[in-house]
Image 1 (cartoon, rainbow over the protein chains, first blue to last red):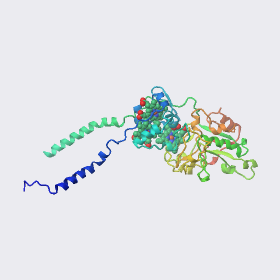
Image 2: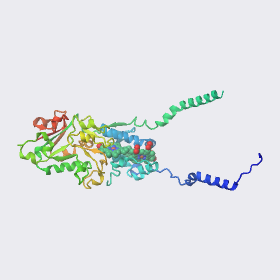
Image 3: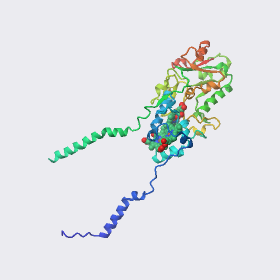
Image 4: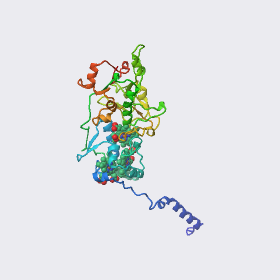
Length: 135
Length: 262
């Protein structure tokens, strides 16, 4: 018995195995090459001219939501509306009137990144998303 | 022997884990040290007071018409919607009959005029605000300068404040207000509100911050005065000492900061 290494129904077993492997790895090869590339938020002319954001770009990338949270508490609860960054540059602490003054295309900037990261800030239920144009 | 071996293995791995802790913490808190060098402050031109107050000279109002421009100015600056259905109405400043504005002061033989004019009413920015006590999230709070403000970011729409306010100064957004803001009477620089939050007059906190008087005061042709109740030399205090004034529902002890010369 010990030298009888024959596999019964070899054909069916191996075809089954191949189909099984194909199915289980489906998500990997199906998505090859079509994974969405990380978006490039588009800077407006005004932002390009300003060169710098409120904080250095990498801090903005990771911390803009905390900054906005601080801003709204400072403005609404403490009546402080002026932010002076470490270079002494002054900013009016306002989401629509300051952030969107430089990043005036919300679609090409904020939304592009948020869609990719699947975040939906509810701020725009109240804050006007294109303060220069119509509501 | 076997169990001692595995005990040592687990102990070793745990020690490694504990050693990693500060490193992990450093990663987790990355970015939150921003703002340490930045400064937050008030605008230079901001108007400040110890206790803001208002004196309304009702002798200068002769009919509903006189109130219109005042209400319109406020509605525009704060993006107040207009609803057909009065149950959905949003009011920051509006006109009220004498008997509703001052129920305990109404009596049989008052001058005719009192019954014919419409009295401007708004949030009283009480010294003792019942709405602040009722709010479970501290969305409504009293600022250092006496203004009773709403932090819309915290409002959960429970409406306890509306039940607490004896003046009906608060409105609830039963519907999304945006589609009902008149095209020709709105302000791109001020946020709207959304369905499910309460709102009310903010004594134009956003205008005081940039050195402007409240919109209703500006539009009133001198019928409404605004200033610091704590400063004996202010316009409001001068008016208060020269005229007999009344407050709304004084007996309730809320101590309104809005006074009426009748």
